[in-house]
Length: 175
Length: 370
Image 1 (cartoon, rainbow over the protein chains, first blue to last red):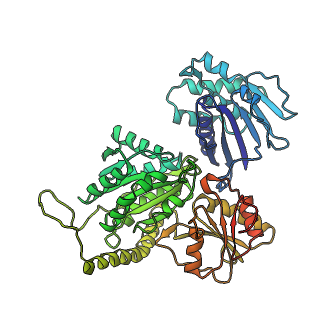
Image 2 (image 1 turned 135 degrees about the vertical axis):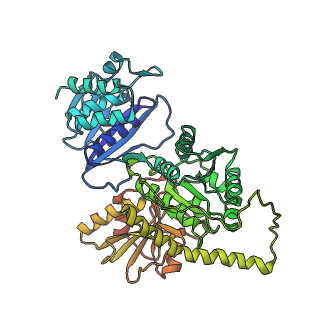
């Protein structure tokens, strides 16, 4: 089982990113579950969502304590939350944009999701949309296939710029 | 169609496929997504039901009663305080023998104000004459809701059915969902003595002591008959759509020395605990109670039983443990866990089994045995 924890702020689309990722994994013929950390969510507050991906049905409903991958959609969350908490030895980190923080030796990837969203004018209520480009980045990392990423995004969003954003993130992420 | 959806969305999809004539509901966390999704189906024309956005849950059930008594298929959904607010009407629906289907998203009762999973809300309605089923996956939420209509409306049952799903841990989780073309799986509702405006009549509901107990016995007789109807419905569901259900969901119970009995999502988590324990040489099994009313006949003889209650009856004990004690003549290790959404992992459940003390009660998170 591959377990993913997504850190973001309320309103940035972390919960939708989790759902998109689970749908893409499902389109890859895997089992997947996605859930938010169940709080009284409010705009701007640090929030967490979880994704589990496996080859067999997933029967675990409790929270992920030892993720294989941590995704940070808003780097400012790192000032208030220990995003590396519980990350497995050899675990991966994906950050939005450039970073200066020491990620304690964990293999860390970065891609400017916010820049991609702004370039394509993917902005809702003043917030750049991060949940579709991040799926492209995850496809580049091999978590899901790019075909399934595109198909999941098209199923959930009719605006084709979302697929363009995912493709841009796929191109721009350096492994 | 294959997709992914939340537990709430799955219930709404099943309601769309069952196509009720009237839906009356009031939103409450964590059920809100069900009524929002149904309202959207009605707005975009996918569902032709009359949707009544009432001012309270008491009114929601009253509206369902009024609609159902005309012979119309009827649905509502609620949670926690909403369910308790409609309590009077919940009794009335069963007493009037109206096959209403209700989804209840299990949530703790305040105070302290808490929006997370617990079963005490629906278990406070256990003596109302409603059938109660507890589900554990998004797929099961869809399948059980579809079957609920057919079971409720069967001429040998004619009682309302409550489909229970855990707040947030199931209502808000995304999992795979396969919807079906139901065809004639749910026959048209035929309600005997339905009110018909073309044939106006006067009805008096005052019932003498000589008659009243007969009506009560008739509810119980139908409850007992419902066991067969549930089985037939679940078997026909398997024939048509492939997925198999029963009054319990048993996992590696055949040769088990110790069986974990639970309801809802904890029952799935318990299966992982069973695998962990088996790898240590402990012959464990998991028995997830699906139908709490009618309560199933269970064979737990000769085994240790660990009951996990996500509920409590103050001054008495766990409500599920009580049922197991009384109906199975077992002396379980009664674990009270998961109240108000308390996190319970499969490792915790494995620990309950390893450290079990049959005949005692243990509050998870409170260190000493009580």
